[in-house]
Length: 260
Image (cartoon, rainbow, N blue to C red):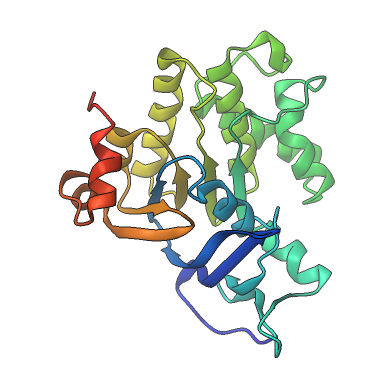
């Protein structure tokens, strides 16, 4: 596989993915540039989470091309099926993104600080003292100073999600992925997490956010994709798509949401 110079943080072209007879992604393409905030919206079962799982290599593409900057992760071989790079290529790709899950995925018996610094020490081989300093700084940024020695069950859901965001940021990724980061939270805790993501957007953190929070997507995202049935139905500036959708399917979907 060859590399090419590009300003794009993430590039996905012609992505297809099926589970058995069910085609979940049907020729999906997207690009994310440095500083972009891309929101992905759509009904349940539309392919949003599968798309995110393919971007983060939790699932493999059947066909298509995936690149992180100049690093080509997968591209179609002679038979038209996606061929992935070597173990070293995949390991390098995984350093270029962070992923925040719906349900936090923190280690329950680790302290908050250990949850953040363990990947830095074990994967990136950063000295523990330096890792601890970075972890404490990120916890302070998340409004969690003083929580370093607690374990996740001692925190609220919103606090746990902010720890998960700090853990993802600690690796200094090129892009941060969020898979419906507030779906497991009540409205008050949702506001806590969305406030943190808004602040990251103001700092021009590159993010891809699968969300059902329409007003948040409109106000925070630069770009927006509406997915349904495994296809991109509509894409454009977030404010344009949400305030003035061009496709009937998008209009019907957005009509089900009451603005805050």
